[in-house]
Image (cartoon, rainbow, N blue to C red; front, side):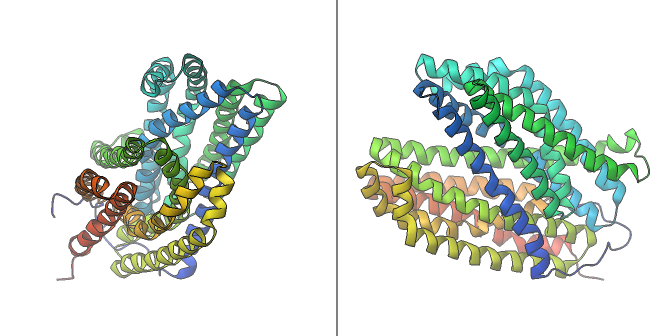
Amino acid sequence: MDAGVEAAPAPSTAGRPFTVTNRLVLSIAVPMTLAYLTTPLLGITDTAVVGQFGDAAMLGGLAAGAIVFDLVFSTFNFLRSGTSGLVAQAFGSGDGRAEQAWFWRAFMLAIAIGIVLALAGPAVAWAGALFIDGEPAVSAAMKSYVIVRLLCAPFALANYAILGYVLGRGEGMLGLFLQIVLNGANILLSIWLGLVLGWGLEGVAWGTVCGEIIAFVIGLGVVYRRFSALPRLSMAAVFDRAALRRMLAMNGDIMIRSFVLLSAFALVARQGAQLGTLTLAVNAVLMNFFLVAGYFLDGFATAAEQLAGRSVGARQRKSFVDAIWLTSLWGFAMSGAVAVVVMLTGDALVAFITTAPGVREAAATYLPWAALTAVSGVLAFQMDGVFIGATWSRDMRNMMLLSFALFLAALFVLPGLYGNHGIWAALHVFLLARGLSLSAMVPLRLRQTFPAPA
């Protein structure tokens, strides 16, 4: 087998056959889309709570802290996505022991990383303040927020592993329930501690800590109760060296991919800033439409992830191909609908977000670019899901690096020729390159993962 493929060990016989249907795709995608859409509500609530104190430095500290946590926790998102792909393959092969083993490996890794992050809170806060380089009052507020919130790192990362296990089994409704518990508790506690008790920004941070702990206790309880009905797994099985190497290699590839992705979005913001404050503000407003579209596309990417992994584990080539086609069709349908809605209502939405006349006027010029990111990004999101589920993580990493190189070339040339239109065109180049390059790899990997019978 080619070195670029990280295939699951083949079981002696084929796993559990299954048929990929529209209903099966939607049973995963719809609940998880709703779950992902609860995330922005948390940010809005935190901003509204802190905003009630009328302290600009406190609001700035919250915004700066949010940037730090986006970077930190996005880096370790492999604890969710990598676990999902590995569990999905074990689920497809009917190997309940392997499902347990992959979960406990990810769970223990999450706890270990989380403890290090919690202990490193002051250092992370200092580095974040240095990176943001804000006014002293903003830096002080951000540091207090970051140090408190990082206390929840072991629980937050463990929740990634729990969600990855749940989604790997295709249990979308359970995943939705856990996300509602997490974000709902977070919102309620942030309001109570931050506003009712008057703890301000630190109250919002403690609300997040408590919300993560509550979700952790409930999620782990669900998983442990399920495992308690099964034969106990030995520590030797959990710490199998070959399995650990496979998991760490895959997680490393996903982490590199996440770093590059964040870097691309950071460069879009930076290039906008080079064209002036107005352009920076306009792009920041319009990127919200891409982020919201991403929540919808993530639901179908999650479905692709689980179904692709399950198909590999079950050795069901037809199910794998059907999963690609159906998640693609639904992804394009959803992205087209989102693009139409943004085109029709974008001006009103921009007016809701900002009252600045200059930003509103300029945003209208670039609105079509923002609306069409949903369509350009369909294959990028969906193929990421397929490659994570199939554990073809090295290909995903390599194609991300290739796409990033093309993006850098476009970002170097196009803004000089077309201004902000060039920045948005470069973003589309990046999204299309990711999706098309991964799609081009599928036929080869498909033949290698599902070889024809002799």
